[in-house]
Image (cartoon, rainbow, N blue to C red; front, side, top):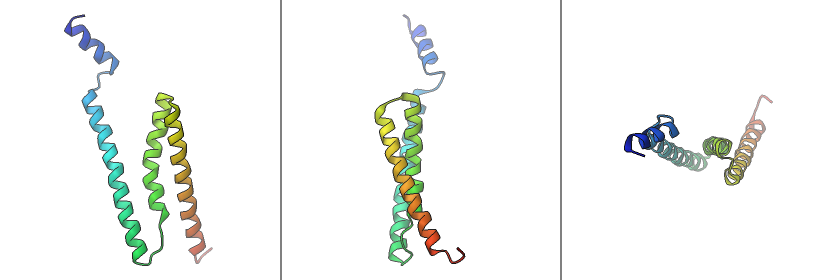
Length: 111
């Protein structure tokens, strides 16, 4: 194969998408999840120290981001590891959501 044939095969395999650009997007998403986790933790701690109780809804939202990512990875790659992690994240999000919603209902003055 000459250089042009290799490039054509690579373009066909990658569907004319830049591999470097795809990796940058993945890395950007990873840092976005980290930034959201740091911000949610800061809000969580501030809320506790100011007497506002615990807001598990923040963590439900934060854990929902990797949850979605792992479900997509499992759907595309069909790896057992991705399924296991997706199920774990789903359980955590459901738990945090349930605790948060329960807290809202128990503190509600109209219900």
